[in-house]
Length: 201
Image (cartoon, rainbow, N blue to C red; front, side, top):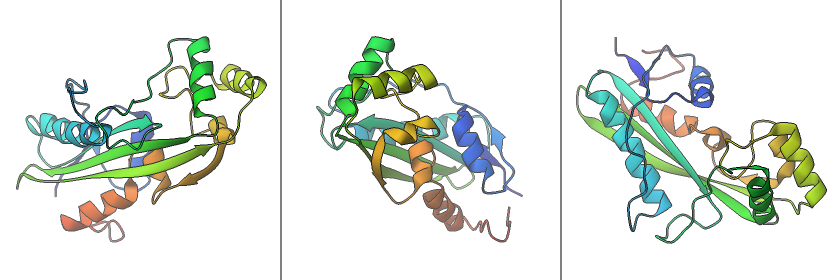
């Protein structure tokens, strides 16, 4: 019997992982998540997922699931690509959504699965694209007052009313947009001999 551990305190990741019907524990890591000089957004999330998994692996054993996510209007593969941040106030949120209007926001979501027994670690970065509608100021103000997404990077939540901001979404796994690429995780678990369809854990 091997333990499954989610290295995150995100309620969204907890809800997503629970969809697989597997028992798991939660142990959020404490690491420095600062972006290093010359680091692309893609390399940042790749590194942080591994660091989170290994941090929990210092004190816990089993299969450790770790993830990180950033959003950028750029493609995420260049050192000067800006990462969308959480707005400080309503005015900054307006500016962010005006910037997102008619643009494509790329979500880069990393996933690591560490087997502490073998020290084998699998890591992937999933890309999910969200294309925004043309938004006017009345729509933006209404949305912000209705949902108050001030603790969300880019000033929107895709899980609820934020879906109304989008023209379309492009990606392999909509779960990755919320924070955990489940299709990729299932493949990683299979590589460790775990088939979720037979509940082999």
